[in-house]
Image 1 (cartoon, rainbow, N blue to C red):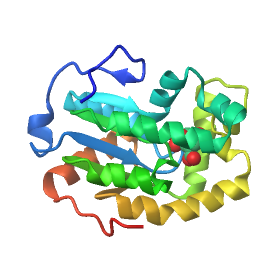
Image 2 (image 1 turned 90 degrees about the horizontal axis):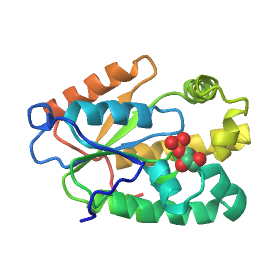
Image 3 (image 1 turned 180 degrees about the vertical axis):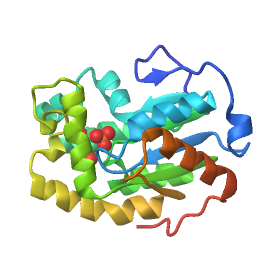
Image 4 (image 1 turned 120 degrees about the horizontal axis):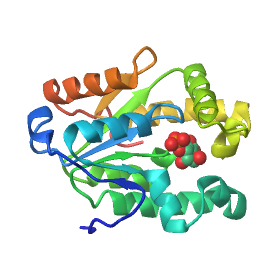
Length: 213
Ligand code: S3P
């Protein structure tokens, strides 16, 4: 088990409330989905409701590497980023009472999927939305962040729209099969997404459609 640190990627809990909101055996909730799915916003809100820690995998990678995600892509390439991502994932899954927001590409790696599947007491949730909605959200996020840079500057994988859509299509079945729960978020606010997820966790046993891809 990894000891808690003063890592900026980690939000620390204030009030433990998980016991009355989700099944008692759960120790981790992993959020997956494409860029713009709302993994970080929903994850932070959910962790707050549960009184759990929130971990954002990209922020963990950045804090471990001392570089931003776009800088890692630019200086070392995507393959190196994916290695750092797997290492950060393994470390993050060692924590308990944690909501973990993955980067959109993390489930593409079989190693990462096995790590997630084999970590006990872990519910995996796919936040689903159509490609156009996700891209709109990424654009809105960069406007909200008052960034004069285009969304692809923060998310290098968006640089080429055609290849971003190809990645989206290729990843959809991977997200679906890895997840115990899929929430369609297109018409939901982040608060409604958290409420829908808490209801599903309380009422539906965790089931994977097919754990091997
Ligand atoms: C990526 C998604 C990003 C980040 C990196 C690569 C991807 O995370 O990990 O830019 O391949 O989809 P978010 O999904 O949090 O934007």
